[in-house]
Image (cartoon, rainbow over all chains, first blue to last red):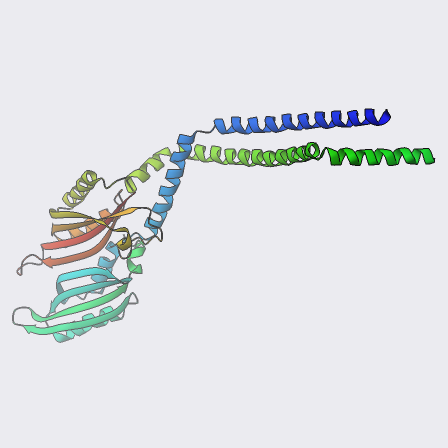
Length: 159
Length: 183
C-alpha cells in the first residue's frame, strides 16, 4: 500500500514539475517574441546599409587621390629657365609617371633641371630623351619623372 | 533495524524501477530543463542585441544629416545628371571650358587598380569619366583641388595637357581621366 502511495506521489510530483517547467519555457519564449516584435526591421535595414556604405567609403577615402600636391611639387622642382609645353601624368603599377616635353636655352639648364628632380626624395627615377636643338626654342627634350603613388595619397598640408 | 534497512532498500529498488520504467517522463523533464537553459541564454543574447540596436538607432538618429551626406558621396546609381551638373559647375567656376565629356562603366575586374581604390571585395561600381577642358594652368589646379573636395567622391586617373598654340603658354588643352563610384 505504502509503495502504491509512494509511486502516486512520485508520478504526481513529476507531472507538476514537468508542467511548471513547460510554463517557464513558454514564458521565456513569449518574452523573446515580445522583444523581437518591438524591433523596427526597416530601420535596422537602413542602419545596416549605412554601415556597409560607411565601410566602403572608408576604403575609398583611404585610397583617395590628391593631385594638387604633385603639381605643387613639379612647380617647386622646375627651375625658372625651363619651360614645359606638354605633360602627361599617369598612374602605372603603383607609380606616378610624369612625361613632359620641355625646352631650355642651354644644355646646362637641362642638366640643372635633371639634377633638381633627381635630388628630390619623392622622385624615384628621371630619364631624359629626345634632346634636340631647335632654332626657335633652343634645346628641346623629353623628361620622364617617376614618383611613388604615395605622393597622391596624402593631402598636402601646404594649402 | 533490519526492518528499516529492508524498507530503505525497497524504496530504492522502487525508485530505480520507476525511473527506469518511466524513462520518457524523466527524459522529458531533462529536455525541458535543457530547453529552458537554451532559451534563457537566447533571451539574454536578445536583450544584449536589443541594447546594441537601441544604441545604434540613437546614434543613427543623432547623425542623420551626416548619414544622408553619404548618399551623395557614394550614390545608389550612376546619377549621371547630377554628375554632369557638378562637373560643369566645377569647370565653369574655375574659368575652364568643358569641351568634351564621356562616361564608361568600369568592369569589376578592372576597377580599382590605378584609379584610387583597390578594395579586395568590390561592393561598388566604378564609373570612368573622361573630360577635355580648355583654360589656364592655375584654373586646372583649382579644378583639381575642387574635384578632390567634391561631395561626390572623384579620383583623377590621369592628366594630359599641352599648350593649345605654339605662340602662347597661357592656354592649355587638358585631358583628364576620372573615376567616380556608386553602389
